[in-house]
Image (cartoon, rainbow, N blue to C red):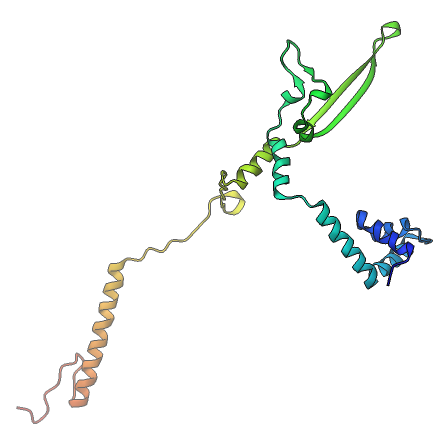
Length: 219
């Protein structure tokens, strides 16, 4: 079913900032309060036909405005290679701002912000307007770090510490192989003596040390 004019405006407005309540208001719906607008916007947004139309439009916008990896690297390059010399002329005794038409696009795209401040200096006939230009670049060290990391030129080092930043405590048990072997030999001998004693008991009497005692009628 084709959406009404207001519903279509709601779809268009929602795709701008994805705020259902504000989109509902901007679409022309009349509501008395914010809770009422929020409730009505939620019901409209959950309408299957409206939701499908919103998802379809967002998908188209994402496809048409998507940035490729090549474009992202190009923008990153403007920041990583930015230089104040592209904006300030240092060829004379005193540095001065280059004419706007001489500033390359790469430098303009590397700028984060530009502020212009104007104020009056002096009084009376000697008063004159002074213009102060302030500009900031995007984070060049951070951008270089990101690029080098992506290129595999930086290796991360992870340091582990114990409680309160101290050393990590660990218990180390040292096993003496000689003691282990001696213990094994002793267990083997004891088992052998038990086996011999059991065999002797089957054939006659033995004394406490495993030696067979002579019978009453023995030679």
